[in-house]
Image (cartoon, rainbow, N blue to C red; front, side, top):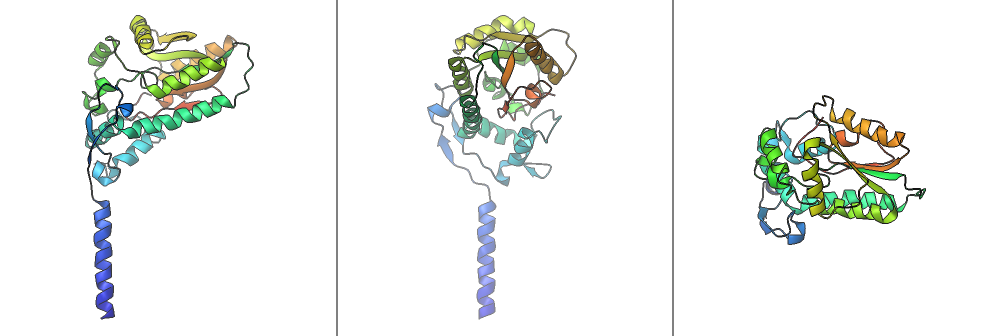
Length: 272
């Protein structure tokens, strides 16, 4: 009798474990405050964090994304095909916004603890794409990064000048202006996109930046070499880079990096 009872308990435990590991899905309506465009609240599925979210070479998509954000997964060309849905759910849902809030909350706490010289020489470097402005409207129709990058179609989207603001970054931006830190933009966009970039930034409520640096046509180096060289120019001119924020590790690596760096999440593409 005792043996039969033990066997029955083991079978129940195994069934419960299997049930807890199975995929589940719930339709929810995303709150307007969580949408990239507050005017649109698309119907999405709740993010599934377990193996039901899809696997890439035996790795769950949430683990793959963690590897990307931690800079352990590098040199990838596209989001794994099996993870397209996972990344889409992440980007469109509350999870992405919550992760961004954590980053910006930490950045603002850091700013609150700074002892500034007050001489107008303190600057903060911002990337633009997926840091200040979001290209999610484009990637939502191009597989959330699961399709090969198409420079022609992406440039056409950029030239529309319609990229929406990333609200958490805007909160940091105006905090910096309030305390006297000058925002500086260093972007991988090329110089021919200056006018549309300025117009897009202004239409999304950004003003008062110190400078906007775009990449010259024909530049052959890496993003790290380009951005670190531009930061070096700032330091050579007597400015102190108190902060640096981007969505790619190539936005923030390479001396001088700045006194403190912050990385926004972006599992949709990789730039070396």
